[in-house]
Length: 318
Image 1 (spheres, rainbow, N blue to C red):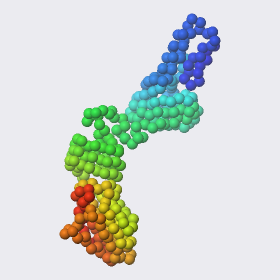
Image 2: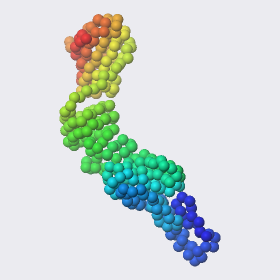
Image 3: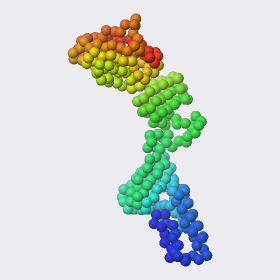
């Protein structure tokens, strides 16, 4: 008598069984089903009730397919039960309605959520269902579900991107809060009406309008006998002088970059600051800093050339 494999239910013919028809059984109940397990695509309808994937020994079923697409309008949460055997599924949640869909086995009450709008691998170890990484989990936000191509229309729109790098080449409006952690380049008119946090460099070859306040964090410099500004780390800097200090030529300067350097005396005061030859002052003379303890002076700079930084000062602002 035939038996069946435990995971994808392929028929194992007994010795001498199906004389004259064993080839048909092999083709239909093994080879076709292996094809289904490797590349089968099954639509699973979901609405308001729990779903248990069908399992059939030696014939087509839902649970054997490699890819499951979940469809339907959800009116409540839906649990989908898969067989308690080891297997990998790729699951696309194409449902609508604001309810969760979870995968589980009959062997446990633990459930794993399938993100709506996402496509991801899921691994069953015969008890638990373990989620792999989908595109949403890579930080692309709603852009994870978009099609990509070479035309502008195929690119990630700014409104969808949790941008790691966003080239903005057409007029765009960013209306929600965004955090940018890599270089952002504006090459066309851009308006931002939400809260934008830029943790990296910004460049613009066209206008960029921000309707709210724009601020940059102050980069704190450690007291030392010589200090160099890393202009890729920010625009505004602060240092408390604890000894005579030389401000070395800055690194990673970007032409047109502007900012400030807040120079504060420590509790002793009378600390001096000298400058690298990249810094330029009015009439070629550096300002004389305040000497009182805890006094603060502000240096305002603009990078004219990579190796030429113009500096003005506001003294004794404390």
